[in-house]
Length: 337
Ligand code: AMP
Ligand code: TRP
Image (tube, rainbow, N blue to C red; front, side, top):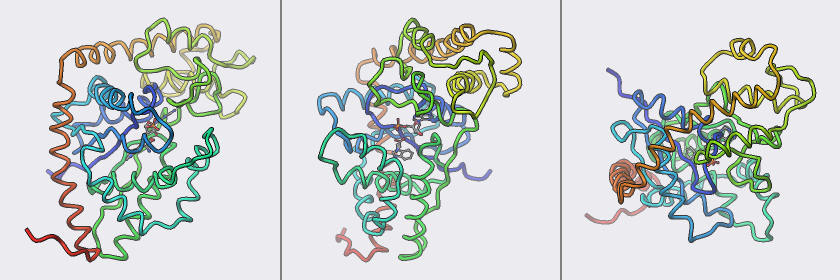
């Protein structure tokens, strides 16, 4: 048997996880975990690149890890850990920063969007360097595949560019990673603004995102308020005017694993009210076992922290090897043993 492919991905412990995070990323991790040698990380060092509350970072970090497990990740297959528990992430990020062009970073659309939206004069250099840290996360484990939503495509291209530049400069060191983006639901849109991505940090409207820990009533209420159009025609469409209906159908399709024709046939002749209720029901039934499992995991005092400690110890073994290799190739004097 060939060795399973190395996979790495992560979610930031900022805000509450949404069904966008689940459909775009976490669901893939769970469904294919047995095929891969996977590391799933809670990327807390990324969460401090925008203003945040130090009092809630720990709680959020534990919560995201618990949601990974509640969604079905098993430590039998996957290594689950916290980024800041393995200091080689930030160490490698510095080495990679020194071979990353400013031009590459200035082109990142997520940096442009986030820095434009920040309501503060102080934009930290960490926000610009964010994708280098992400490249370090990926390259540290000689990752082949990175399962993420569509919005991360450009960051993974950058990780490839950085790896190629490093290999060309210092000799073959890093595996060149590739993005693994789901065919359906790679970009779940906001329910209130279906032309913008559903995001866990958008707090303007309580009807924007559905969170993984939302109560069934709340989920239903949010879907009932979802923006649609006046055409009363339930079909997939790339027309921005029809983005709301398209988004509801996409969520339904991703969670019921049907093809587009099957979904359209299912809703043929039905009204938007019906569509919204039915999508809400599918989401509620998807979340129910996750929420139940989450409550059980959190009730077991210290369990999540133990899983994370074991995960970090496993990750550290690979991380240490890679960083030693990188330092040797870059010409650093290594400490005597
Ligand atoms: P973040 O919330 O930025 O930490 O994203 C964590 C993961 O969820 C990444 O793989 C994202 O691509 C994915 N993701 C976040 N929001 C969405 C969305 N609205 N639709 C699909 N995937 C998403
Ligand atoms: N930037 C990713 C996001 O916001 C999170 C992330 C950080 C990540 N490091 C990663 C995803 C490494 C995949 C691999 O969605």
